Image (cartoon, rainbow, N blue to C red; front, top):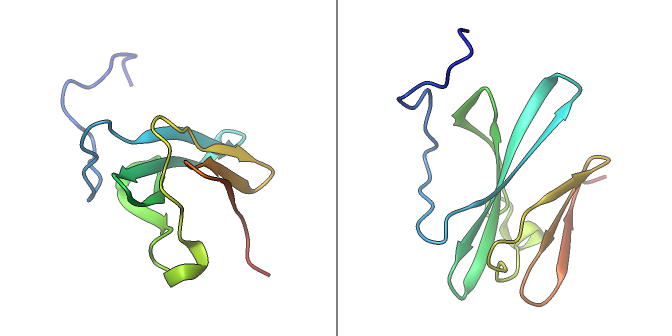
Length: 104
C-alpha cells in the first residue's frame, strides 16, 4: 500500500523448492485472477507443474501429480519456465514439450 516491499513473507506455499528452485511464471486475466505457475524439478523423477493463487501462494489451485498418469510431467528440464498462452500452459522437459489445458 505504501509502494514498499514487505520485509517478511505475506504468504508461503505448502511446498518447498530446493536447489535449483522452482521455475516461475505469472498469468492473469487483465488485472484480475492472477495465477503463479511453478515447475518443480525432482531430480530424475517426474517434475510437477503447480498453480497457486497469486493473492496467497498458500492456496494451491492445481498440481500435475493430482490426476494420476493423465497429467504426469516428464523429467523437468532445469530452469524451464512455464509459458502460459490462451488458456494453455507449455512446459519443456528433458525429452519433450508438455501442454496442459482444459480437459473436454
